[in-house]
Length: 418
Image (tube, rainbow, N blue to C red; front, side, top):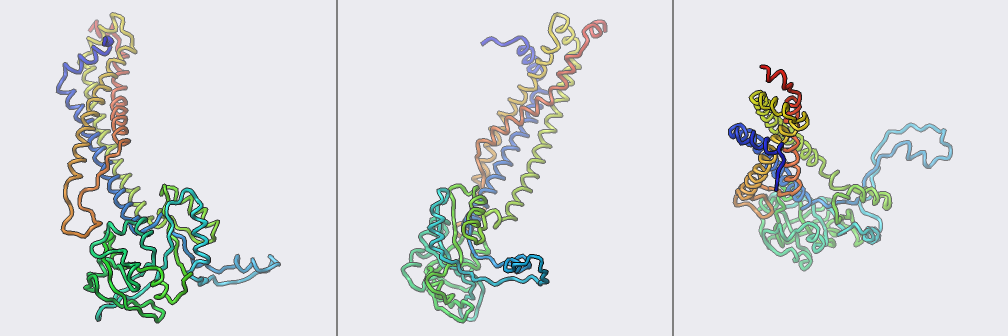
């Protein structure tokens, strides 16, 4: 394929200054490779922590929330809106149980965006083994649905989670609880629901979600057993947990459920505000570092092309004297910047991928329970590679434009006259 004269001249200038071209390309390569490496690490880390949060947090949780009694609520009972009432706002204690929970579940299941729905009975309890007591919560669940939503089976260390349905007084405890109370599968544990009811339960399994707070406080029982601990009937449900086909739609679906049911619908973003804030801060820091790296690479390209123009003044003057336009001269030097950007970008993509791939195989765990992080969480997300090459080329084009414009304005008469 025949290339244009401008391209031939641009390539000649680049190859005649191999050292400078190499240095400029390596600057871009370093910036691009670090961009890919840091983006891979950040996205991989974010994905890991999001997945970890979903090990115990549903996309949406529907529950009864206590409300504050104020003048607005009292005025709703008065016909004369001009009546002034002085109040001291107080929390209204409401029943933690949902009204007609299984009717609400049927309503939720009609939404095509919903993947799984499961009821839960949450009981605050005191665990006792021997003379040791710790506080925590018992989650009364349908263990089959719970496993589909949170992969409980994948977090099991010992025991069979399905024994939760087969053993009437069975309890699946977190590893933190087991360690603090020195419990193993088959041991008995006393669970006090706070309302005077005490249950002797048998440990049918131990799990480790990887979230310390969860593993040290939370246990699972079947719904009937949790209702017995609370001293409630079989219709008593405190929470409805919902997973969606697209968890990013949780906010929209949650607002709709609040309007339909009148209960509080907490989406996973609201439940993990600190985590999302940390993600944003990391993204700002990362993009700032990468921006500085590519800016430094851009200044390197700018300086190299500037030096080339000073050294090639006479050649530029001759080119313009024999008929090359200012646009052609601009094209020659702008092409050099583009070739440097493409070369450095392609090498940077390869090197960034190799760095990310290598780190993903670096073992950082130890003899830890299942569900914890064992290797660096790296993501190989194709858009990051596309963004990297575009970012690299745009940086080099911006760095090469001003020297190219400067070369286009060279007056051949003054240069030839000396």
